[in-house]
Length: 477
Length: 101
Image (cartoon, rainbow over all chains, first blue to last red):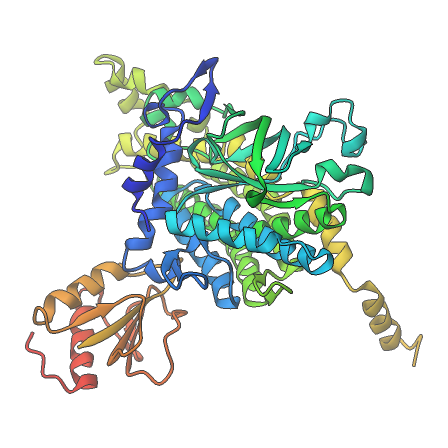
């Protein structure tokens, strides 16, 4: 297993081609825009060595018998699924933001399960390649991007009818030794500071979409791979410190557009190629794995937000007001509901045909559906509690000014015996945790809200529920 | 003597679980006890350190176990500062090992 420092050092060996603000970033460790996300991901490594989190953050690999970082583990039982939930909350409490690594973890489990089922139907040998890849990731303790989301172009057309086929990653050429792929994956969390990407199709497909039903793994510095790092709300604050709110770990995960420009992938790293009927299964499996997380990592992040709001109320001198306490209750109610459903998805998980465990689908969908509302509502309450200074605070540069600084501290003082600079830090934390990018991530990560709603209706046993009602009210005996 | 230690997930910590265990270790004679956080085979006793009264940390069955549940150990309330000495006292009783504070 790697420590956080060893992970950071391992990134120096990557030759990832990445661009931001019109320039190529030669050294991501020195980039103020990317460094906070590296620091966050490093926590997923260090946590495996802390005594109080070691059991949560590590597992024994069923392939090597060695102790591994849990983020590289194939889920073996319900206890693993529950530990996932608890681990993610614990890390969220430390970082106050997305720590990126769970996407690849879920992708590995989804691909592991589907490759087994493809092999069972077609006699292919995909799963043994998946296991080889998983072992490689475990032995090197690498960080994997979950490459799900294609740009998709015209959402009304299937992949094979797109005017530009590159809006879905696809096989451009099949060769004896592997495939050449083209296309892109959008919104790729942690791509800038990961080692590998595990690509999956993003929609269910028809027979004509054969070239688009592809799943493979590639190093992020493979020839032909280009990353364009995404803009975030307030990202130029990363050039400063205090105004970031969370200067060590940043906001959200740091997302990139990952472009595949005729990238060669050897057959050993291809886990699906043309088996269109399994594309939808892979999408759903990944999505459900990932949806469970939003009541875990976000629960931890929201714990921090709730704490910041409670502290802010004290700094404002409003903590004892009944309406403030009531708002705190609402925040706690929503957050614990999120975590409860994530845990339920784990406790009620069941084995897939491949043997690895899978969250209870309805509870996972509920978790994600609720975060799309709760995070916004909790943020609204945080804004309400904190006050208007979230929107109007002077900059840290003015705060440093010998004349302006004392004036800012004078006029933004809160309750007696509280430190005004601390009040400003809390306000910046709340402001940045509830700003645009972090909320959008909760809205669309692991699938947009409508996707969960479709899942909820699909899995609800309305026929039986109707029979129950009809029996009780005497329509049927 | 090998003592297994299991921490809860820490989602609702009323006590600093890490600090409590560090104090326990500092109270024990050096080199005599080995604390195991992952491989719990052959442990002679077990300490489950929970941050709150929910006490969700699961431990192997049929173990001699001390369960810390927030400020409580086996139904009795302690201050956070006195939890460690209470754990050491119970460890002594469980293992029959006379531990001088």
